[in-house]
Image: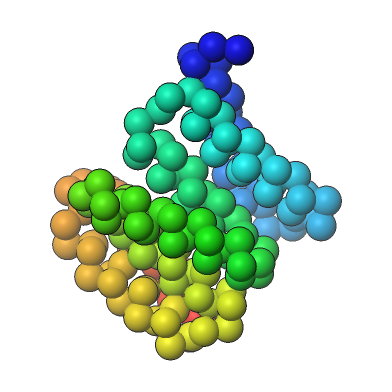
Length: 151
C-alpha cells in the first residue's frame, strides 16, 4: 500500500469515526467499532507520511473517543500527546483550542473536575486567536457542550 492509499484510508476512517460520534444511540458494539476506526485512522495517517498536524488531529480524535466512552486512561494518553505536540510544533488556531478541550475531556472522564475546568478555561481563552469566525463559533459550541457536562 502506498502513502496516498494510506492517506485516503486515514481520511475515510476519521470521517467514519465522526459518524459514530454523531450517533447518540450507539450500542456497545458501535462504541467498539468507533474506537477501532479512530485507531485505524491514526495508524493510516502515520503510515501516509502525513504532516505532524494530521497525526495531532488523529491523537485528538482518539482522546475524544476514549473520553466520550469514559475510558480515562486512553483519553489522557492521547490528549497529552495531542497537547504536547501542538505546543511543541507551535500550532495555534482551533487545533490549540481542541488540544486543551481534549485535556479537559480526559480529566473529566477520569473524575477530575478541577483540572477539567482548568483546561476548559484554557480552551475558552484560545478562542480569541481562532482566525475564522465559523471555526470560532464551532469551537465555542463544542466547549459549551463540554462545560454543561462538567458542570
